[in-house]
Length: 278
Image (cartoon, rainbow, N blue to C red; front, side, top):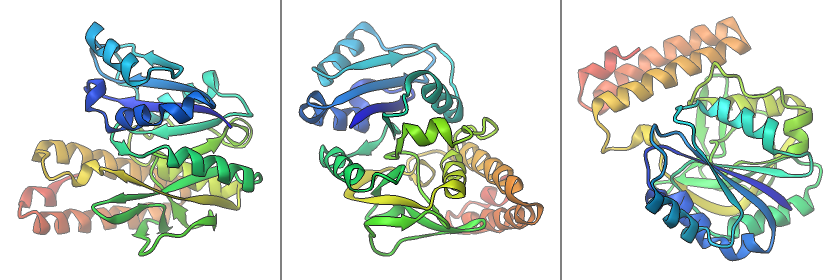
């Protein structure tokens, strides 16, 4: 197994990233396997000298590169660049956000699953948030639903989606059958777009028998209304765009769904301003 591991961070020092802490705990495994860690820093300012020293200490013995240019690139642009410039057909791309908690068990189970399911190109961990399974999940048209219980092994790709963080994707699929991430999608729904495209050519993905804890930013109770409003507006815009790629009627239904969802948010959070978010 030859891994290209991508971590995207923004306005965080190395020790503030749960993902970088987790990778630090996987050093012993990674040292014994081919890998390259790419840390994409979307912040305006790069790591300081002391932060670089901290990062080097955290990933001691690992092969990593730090990528910063002062531009807040969209996830779709980052993913496309890594696929085009840093990935070979025999490698596997592992995508991480900054706030996932995992152990070396993830990589052990991934290696076992890739050997057992050589005809599959996508491997997904079970991801939880507040003890609820949030990925993989079911999806029908514009509406999704969470799994009540974990499922493992080969899963039909159709009518399923997943979040980006923790995805492990074979380079052969990404370079030969995937059309690339749509750059109209900036941060939200890049994962839903990928899963939709994946199901068009691939029959199965593999759900790994390993659990990862991940924070869903939109449901973070400590964020201000303005932060939540910006996230919601981008989530709504990208969902409408993705629905429009599929059909006019799905886009119309999705538009109505988000109008209702805004009202439900206003009621749930006791803030009428949510009802007017667009």
